[in-house]
Length: 208
Image 1 (cartoon, one colour):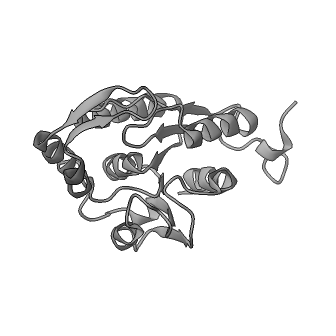
Image 2 (cartoon, rainbow, N blue to C red):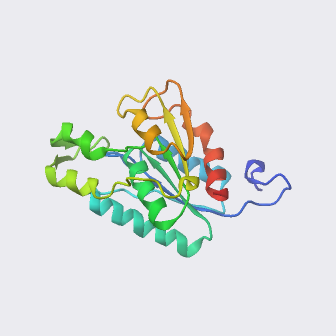
């Protein structure tokens, strides 16, 4: 039996959508938001498909994998979207620009090459405990992915919380000022209330 929450107001099924979820730096598909997204799709979007790849540490490899996964979804769905958190939001911005697809950004990183300069040297993956070496080369690699100006602002929904302890939300507010921008007071980098935003996020992906 269909979940009533997954039906349109007229009782019809919504158009299936392919969704790519991109986790943040040193995170994984086991992160809280990734898990909440997966569960929500299982409950409310049984006809749709969600991909949550394990992004490599290397930034050039990560964006290449994200591109490949997005193309895979485009082969099966007329409508595709990207959800990106933190560094995943940084990647999602590039994909939205290059593929002209809608993306929802959750407390996205805007200048990771500047932020990461403070973390050069050994860094540890949050979920696996594996240690990596962050080098100057990595700063150059991630800077090359950056979008300097958003060309399709109507394709981006940006959710920020001012209490983000990792990123200065004002940087994102400036870059995405012409997009659909939602700035909530308080919260944190993980984005409090994420699950409650999912219906709105998927609707944006369908309509944008």
